[in-house]
Image (cartoon, rainbow over all chains, first blue to last red; front, side):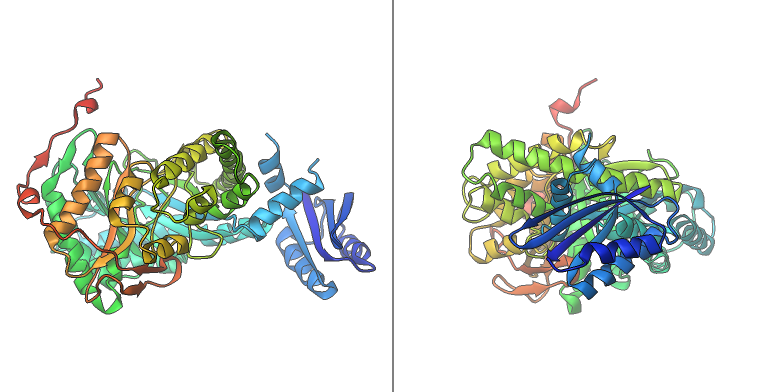
Length: 89
Length: 454
């Protein structure tokens, strides 16, 4: 099972580092990262492998939301199927 | 692999345009609960509903969290109670206790509405149907989450005018019994022509007799997403307009399909249908009226509105059908006045009248919905309004419905607050000319010529 992490907010030092640390502490492997800056806003998408994750998806959703608040960005973790359903036939 | 732009599009639909799954509704068959004792019947239906739907709310919330898409309502529909109770043969006076049992089961399972306090009387009324009809006003007054519906017409069998007249009286009684709460009982009751058996939306949901023991039906929504998409094609021709709606409806429906399949899998209940309806809420950015305005109408109700609704309804279906393996329910655009801030505004501005809403129901998914009218509207006029709407459904081979609220003590210009998703409604004017002698003819209106397809 794969998850998609998206980050949206004002760019600052260490956003990716903090999220990657959160992931590695829970044994979640980062498979791919893409990022853009639009109008000074930081836009990042990360594909993560949730097989073998030390925590259930729902509790990481809550944890990442809290982490995002700490660093002033919006962090979401979602099951990748919602994106596949919408954008792939 | 999903691109960052695609991920962003999905997230913006959810966070900025109010994309959500409007309801996961579990249909539950109660025909096996019949018992000669009323008490035992109530116990059996309570036990069965609670057993089947025990995890419904929890599963809905889990899916919402994992996929990051809100699942707004978790609901239950049951076999029409007049049918489930018919097998009992008990001699109880009414079915109010059954409604109270349904209410308790809804509270226990945590769902916000339970539908199916219903009867199908489009051709004739059995003694159990009669008992159920007589129970509706008190049942709606004394329960909180129970929804009721009655099918009084169909393309196949015509219109049961005796039933229509009974509903006119019933509406008035229900309004009276809940007069201290703006006659809210009527907001939980709907009268149908060509009612569907797998509708997940309230107040008209029930679990039809052609269904299995249980089913998961999901209602998708997202008027805000359609409106946002149309902002990008402002001024473009109708081909572009329709294509944009279709493409967006496809994406919305795919999310519904995913959620429905996942809910069915986790609850071990077969997936029934996706209902492709665009259902507004009172929130800004979650409105059918805003779509109509984005299409180019100054206000809903302006000339062109019926065409606009027709285009919207048809394009949503065309886009949605390919996105789901099973489409059913009501599927189209809902136009409940009190639940759509843009419709409320249009009524206040004098742009939208009852007659124009009636015209819109010829081409939208259902009918006259959540419309407050003066409480002193004569019973025969209520029957006349229902009869007109039933005729539209019967002749056009579509589902039509009426959910009107004659608000006791209120007049045109007053505004009535129902609260929550039911919103608030300006009391609308009703044509004051009488139809008494017409509706009081009674009997049945024969099935239309095009029903003879065999």
